[in-house]
Length: 209
Image 1 (cartoon, one colour):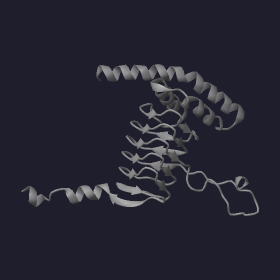
Image 2 (cartoon, rainbow, N blue to C red):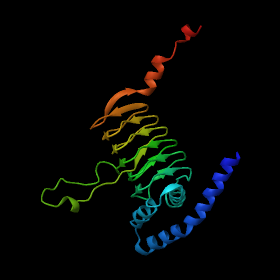
Image 3 (cartoon, rainbow, N blue to C red):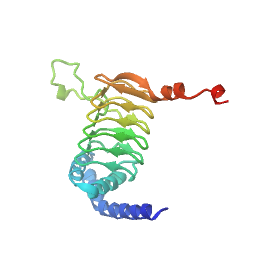
Image 4 (tube, rainbow, N blue to C red):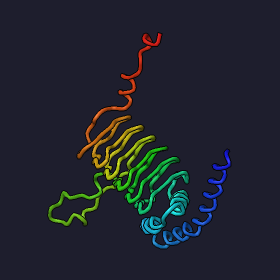
């Protein structure tokens, strides 16, 4: 391990210790209320910490609070996680001013600024026209976003995104994005596939000979 990597690990360990009292307070509140609703409040508070200190604090708290989440992540200023049942793998970058619902994000994925990842597309039922929508409930779904993906600024995600895919800025993802797909638009539609481009551009074995 290099000196820089060692120093970074020490800093992360310090922030992990600093985050422990806040995590303990969260557990106490959760035990008293029987609900994870307070998690969003803690997330809002940590989102307000600027600079590198904020990045380290958020990584430490989410490692403790969110099952399976790494502290080798970077989460930007004013970005809020709304559900504790969110898993963020190592190497993930999430830009500022994002709203992250219940999801699982794979290694080395990039999430641009202002991105909204919703907990599925059925959070609100509206089938009964005689009742207010806010009284009809809905279903939350843990959205899977694969590894090595790039989700552009201001995109909205309501469906799964497979590994090595790209979602263009401002797109609205309402159906699954397959491995290596590049999608854009509202609703997001296939532009081309990165992996197919790689195959067609690679020289054949005969050409190599």
